[in-house]
Length: 205
Image 1 (cartoon, one colour):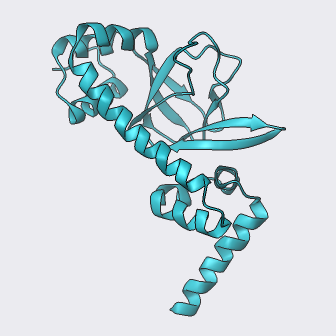
Image 2: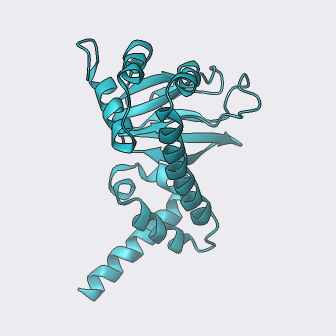
């Protein structure tokens, strides 16, 4: 199935697609020929609003976050812990306009760049693309719905408790300042909530 030219991130992406729906050899050949690896050091940007938003990315390893800047403050919008496709916000009606989102590696990360032009080509040539995309969109819609619900919980402590439920990796692997900005609270508030939860667990033990 794989050619000798396929890199490890390309092989992982094809396995990811195959886990959703079987792909054909022609599909695989296009992935191997037209995608390329991107290595990003910790805290460096993968994309900013100053750059053209021409790619989706498959996170082979590492942690990446999306965030926006508002009144000089970073507001985290999502996190990826690997083995999934990510991208900055893109208006399908105006694909030339840069995204307002930044993409930042929170640790050394290896990604695979997938050009939007390639995605358009895959849609036209390989029917499996439609099935794979529909299932990926369904997963991403579910994640977006979870984020939307989380943002509407009025209690800061309940937002954090919900975050623990839906993102156990985030609690242990993300910087506290990123969690705080994602949950819409000050660092002091997050620290107070975390300490309160720890004390409650000790009292219950």
